[in-house]
Amino acid sequence: MKKFILCALLLMVGFGAKAQFEAGTKYLGLSTTSLGLSYSTSERFRLNLDATAGYFIADKVLIKANVGYDHTKNIDDFSAGLGGRYYFLENGIFLGAGAEFVHYTSSSNDVMIPVEVGYAFYLNHYITIEPAVYYKMSMDSFSNKSTVGLKVGFGFYF
Image (cartoon, rainbow, N blue to C red):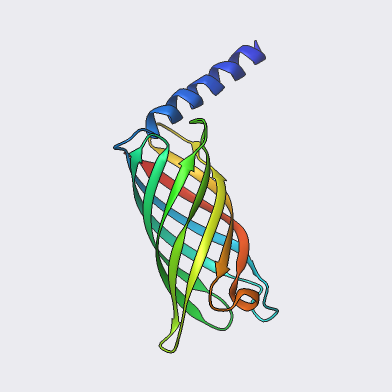
């Protein structure tokens, strides 16, 4: 009986996820990183808030734009970027990449190349929890500004 219930739940999650990754679906997301690590010894801790909006241009292919706020011990920065996600086998696992412009101060800006791997876990037909592992490579100072970390987000597919 337990195996039957588990199989039924997995099928429901699979069918719910399949409908959301079709062309024409819109996406809104909000994520935060509670732990981000930098290669720099002076900025080991980061706290980030990120808002994302996107549109599925094809089945399993999401084009997105994001804005973000990042707090470190020394400085607060703002970012804006464009990117995309590809959802594998319509099961919720995704791979994302893009480019972000980061504004630190009036005399210091950067371009970052973010890459992420995550999973969209459906709470209902529209809302997901999306844990992901990310890496952001700095084009300005690879050794001091590149970061790697974990993030958790909420997604709304409509």
